[in-house]
Length: 405
Image (tube, rainbow, N blue to C red; front, side, top):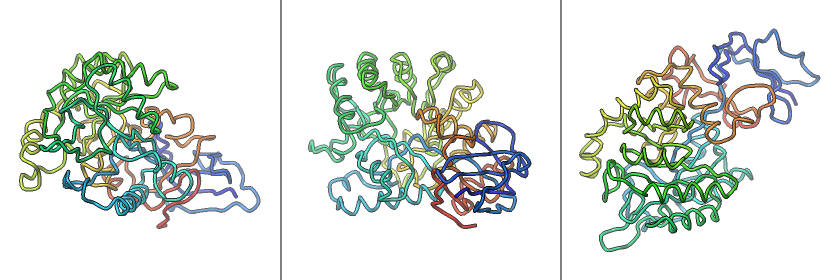
């Protein structure tokens, strides 16, 4: 049955100006028939349903390109060994539902959950964003994804895949792809939360990164997402030909040039940069590194925004709270991005990164009807999207998953 969503302000995700008095028409296959001025909509078909949006804004469903559903802020590393895995499964299912209700209809999990969650969403066993998964994160011994405790026990065997040579990096890539990974996640630098390293430390070498990229290319051209914070590691990753730089806090003008020349995406995860610093709630090493890098990160990402480096929305949800994903848009705007460009970063640009832009990411005829209805106009006040209570309706492929209208 065709559904006609009328009396809406349309923001289609392409960067085009909002359309007042717009109509979104969705057919019974969950595809968009019309998205534009109401005057240009096709006449209603027999039995069509009409939904009056009352002047609210309709946008594409948002895409978070960097999250960790297995994590929550403040969750101790040891909990990976002590928590009941059955309870963890249901906790992740609840995070999926809450994230979907916050307006995220597609999500890329960059390490920590098996591919079965993707299948469960596809089969309708649980409600959540459609998923792409990395399964595990490839790191070297002592690197960002090495979760070994002082006694040698791996506190998070579900998260890290260790590789210390180019050949081991190639084999590790094969392992995660065998496990069903849609994207290969690898560490080119140290990180903030890991105890063994620093963002300025290099992770896998350029040779090792190239082995990962080459192996991923041999498997239907699978993309490679790289945790890269410090400048040297970002350079290594870009020169290895990766698909996306995750975080990118040490981006320089030279590295912006390289990213622009190669069309490499930057996923800046500003939600972690803008998160409050509380020494009582963080490990000492985490607080020390975050304190040092906060200002540097904002300055460099703001410069990358001015340089028009391709940016896709990603939050690192799990390190920061889940179901607050669209706060990231406000941070992009705070660092100088136009609100329409920020919306595009979370819709069509993110779809391009995930290679889904042929069917998702914008409200255009022929695409799947993933969309959200928000109370307010985010072009005038981007912050309205960051409050889940303002997200009144969420649909995936035309199927309404949340409805507070």
